Length: 600
Picture 1 (spheres, rainbow, N blue to C red):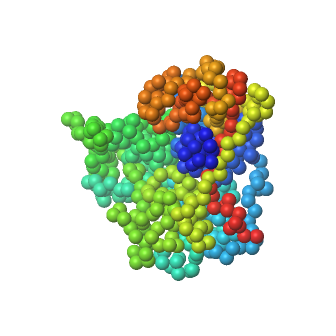
Picture 2: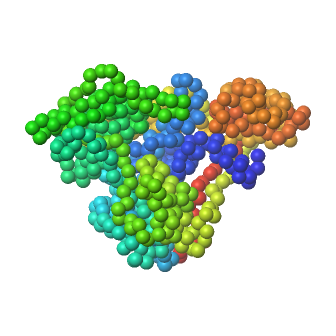
Picture 3: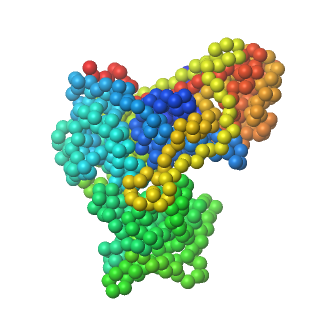
């Protein structure tokens, strides 16, 4: 395959399943190999170049990489590599990295950028544009940077010192910060003659429930995201003994665990949907259950029960979920008595939404039917040429790593715009495919496949963990566990690449392949027919097949990448070198890579 062809770049990229699934396309196998070698600074910087917040994300990431991990597809008892927790290993064990951070030009390029909101999207824009000599002014109503990472993620999951350290790596580049300053008018910001404005204000508005009793019990009913922020900023330090948390997402899990630490003795989570349909990450649910918090599914809230002007309980209706052929869900009430749960306080965590009352409707920004600014999903531009939006503010609540990916792309757009170029002409990723051959049958890396089970992360003793909000529950991997877990990685960026004119069709590679993913067969125009003809039929249609050109006999070599171990045995066994181990490198383009735009 010619690596210069775009379709082949995509093929090799998709084979590195974890990196492909990561919104910021972090080179996962590369930093895992560095961790295995004890090169923690280097592993941290590989992460920092892509995801900007390795220590934060090593504790809080939604981990889209892990469901994609090839390791989890090798057998019923296999689990993916603990990619997220290995990221934390690099952060926890690094030394001083100040000398590895980019140099910031003393001579600026004359362009002024405003960032509204100090969350991960805005900080990523700053991290990418500061090395190019931009003057950046950051506005945020909080007293420190971090945005909703700071206000919504409890410190028992993310210690303040980790958050401060990684936020300050960006701010210390010379960003002009205006904290404790709420922006109430985008028009006023634009009148300050900034060359571009980026909005990264998150999805700050928690949804409410208009149920009977809501107004009468207002003092003891709290919107989850607002309540978490009040706890984070020490405006709230206690809660009632009996607490109900409404909702099944990650915010609900943070609310119930926080309530437990602030005095809640009987904390219950209720969810409208079946348990298996909960939106919270599985590990978030596990952590809540580990702390003894019951989760009641199929409970639809119907009423806040108030006696003598005081909240005393909630009434729920039991339901069952039914799905139509399109997968749409209906909740069917059961013929059962209502469920009454006593409570002193209720935390509502049933979703978040965007709110833009501060964006005037007469400044050239078009809004859609949901009263959201229209944002281009590739460039993150609005209909106002100077205004860009990313993170949760762009398309609604997602996660930190997605906000980082938005920030990288928005920074590219801002840089192109400020230099008078077409923002739709996106720079190409940096790619390479380099042979690892050192001898006839020797390669520069060793890839024995570990048979270890996934390592469980150690936890603080429960009684100690629940004492206060600042005791970090997860203790992280020690060096031994880190090395063991790193060895489970299959090094999917180490590709087995085939050269047709070297093949003598001896079938040695087919014979030696431990997962039987190689097949020599006649050509087929129909891919589904070809998939069925393989030694083991290739059923994962999302993973493209590797199909060679014609061999001497007219047959083709086919590899099913879905369960390839990347062990390299085919290359070691091949007598002619038709198979080669080659490292595929994919580095997502970033504005800060643009040397042509760099100031002195």
